[in-house]
Image (cartoon, rainbow, N blue to C red; front, side, top):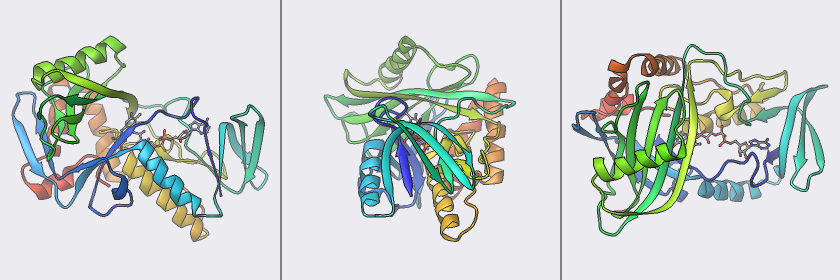
Length: 327
Ligand SMILES: Cc1cc2nc3c(=O)[nH]c(=O)nc-3n(C[C@H](O)[C@H](O)[C@H](O)COP(=O)(O)OP(=O)(O)OC[C@H]3O[C@@H](n4cnc5c(N)ncnc54)[C@H](O)[C@@H]3O)c2cc1C
């Protein structure tokens, strides 16, 4: 098995922070940065709703820790070879697939395989009725005094000023009583410029949260398309798209990480069983709900926050059932 990943720089994404829902005892628990059993949501009216989410936990995993763990596991599997190259083409070839790329040293490379699984971001989004962007910037911050409650994650805080189309919210994921990841997120048609994100985060941390002066340790940002279009998972007889490129993003929430893990496990199981390894689509009804919610967030300004606010309710059983992105 050959794993081709882009060399540092170029198409390789910068370090990211993934959060996802899972019961304790998951495969990445040993390298999590943090985890929470209690979540809080603030409505636009400022009313907080706090919920315990047992038996689940909301887990934070940083991509460098994930990559180190996976690299160590792969190093014990002699049938897996790793190569650094920028892939330029993946297509069907006689009896299998052909993958072409450029190595870090600039040389051309090509590999023939029985199956190819392509996780490169698609060059275009699928045709859709609704496409919103979930775009966000976050700061890892450090305060001089204890200001955060590390037992509670503020998941969606709608006390942010709302954009004319779509919605916005802040969130606070504390690592200890002085350190947290604080983010400003919009679901809207277009990204903000640099000054827009900075102003939104300053307003959220200072005016909404009332935090004292903060030291910004690092910044991360991203754009996740939220669309009711369908991503084709099969690109040829032997070529499949996987991950976000294969439709693993939940349309209403942007959560992708847990679905990617499940999709990859399904592919591995199919290969082991000698079946065609077609990556699974997101479970039907939830994906459908998500597509309707994405459409609602885009088109129904009055109801948009209600679409997300019920995600966490005081009743734990219902909260667990309604959590966005739950595996
Ligand atoms: C900043 C940020 C934060 C996010 N947070 C969350 C979160 O909290 N929870 C969540 O569920 N989702 C989150 N997401 C969504 C995120 O897209 C997915 O969680 C996840 O990274 C998607 O996995 P993937 O494998 O499909 O794509 P990626 O993680 O983007 O992986 C693609 C891989 O393909 C490689 N690659 C790309 N192009 C080439 C090329 N030409 N040649 C060779 N290799 C190539 C890259 O190096 C990379 O290894 C976040 C996204 C961003 C950007």
